[in-house]
Length: 156
Picture 1 (tube, one colour):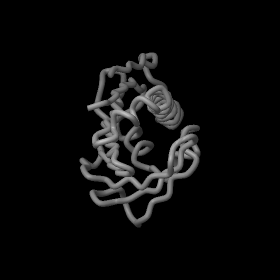
Picture 2 (cartoon, one colour; picture 1 turned 60 degrees about the horizontal axis):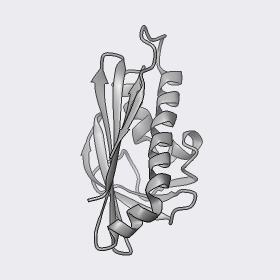
Picture 3 (tube, helix red, strand yellow; picture 1 turned 180 degrees about the vertical axis):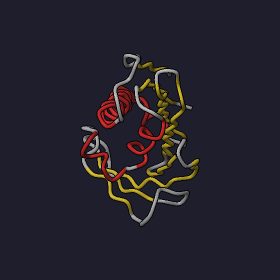
């Protein structure tokens, strides 16, 4: 199953990082790889919540939250043209503040083709999402951090 994982250490408390990650409608303000994010329902993010997402060079998608642990993680899924994309967002406490782990997997009959065609774009978008969330969360965090921001890591 083709996939990608990216970790970012953020000098901000998990609550601050979660606030940025879970406020998906504001992603276009902070994340340059998201043109539009429109919640298709009201209230806080929950299992079953749907969001219409537009990103440059990718087809518009509707993502449905399939798993959510409030304050910690959510996973959403989109299916189109024989490919199911699953994206995970996990915020955990870390000595430097928080660790944000972003994952993306593709499954389905045509997933291998989607991965071959979009692999480098997906990697760049996920890394940009992580860096953008880090920048916003650190800027909005209360008080200076006693630790410098940590590195980010990617793996396949």
